[in-house]
Image (cartoon, rainbow, N blue to C red; front, side):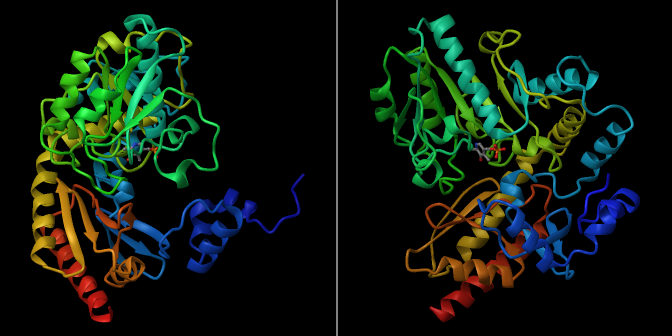
Length: 426
Ligand SMILES: *Cc1c(COP(=O)(O)O)cnc(C)c1O
């Protein structure tokens, strides 16, 4: 029996979703999100209706350069033709079978991940948080079955200002009050040390330590690049103390820092690595825990799982996304474009800017403490640049890696005008 409602069920069922989307104004889109959605985000006042490459458009037809790129998940650009082709082709085959079956897509995806990462095996998941949870479970089982840590005593060392996702286990070892304050109680098993400090890491190691988990560059934490030698030093400490090295490459991975993976800036190959974001080609959530065989093969049937993890549609998209990143050398492109962007920002010589930090096309512009960052966000929007602050008053620039030199120069010019506008009113 049809229910009494003003919701356009009938129109959607007969004419499709798009017919109704086209009737929604900007105000209505915002009102619906506000009324029917939780308020756990504070979005920019831009209602995106279309995207292509590094550009997005709102319903009034205003064009913006997307400098967030979905927190670096849109490395391939919006509607990457290669990714969209894989998606469409897969829609003629099969999309979801669960891990109760084999599929050629899953097999090829796992092989592609091993080839691209240089690691041996993967456990496919969906979100970055799940990939990290998978690494944590693997490290703990390794602790009990291989290292001989007494049951339930395994410790994982993490870093101050870490960001690994939003599950209750993960926020439990965040140092950001906002992420965790109201969400306890949290379980034990995580020890925090300052990021970039090898001596503090070594001092925190006990016989029960099974792993060190960190980002090779703290992205959410404010584009914090560790001191030279830190990545390799961490690897050496993990070897010395028989513990696993886990890099969270969810944001830094797949070329973003100018290397295939952020750890490749030094001799710091991990035992386990969490990947996600751009692995989905900008269209689907696709993530994985990737690692060395001796750790990965610890998992047995029933230990872990995900209904959607590794589904044929996600796997096909992941394969196409990986092929694009490999064949078109996203790492090299990111290094080249990132250097151009960071040098351009520095050459602006803005009195508002305290520091520009960059590794590849992961660029942070930190403004001085007296700068009104809300005014700067607004001035950037007026220049049709969308970006947001990370912690530590740092504006993040992570546009799609497929962008080009002309767009990079355009970003520099627009940011220069926005900084000048804010400086003029200060
Ligand atoms: C975004 C991010 C995550 C979480 O990924 P989700 O897909 O949002 O769960 C984890 N680690 C890092 C470093 C990230 O940037």
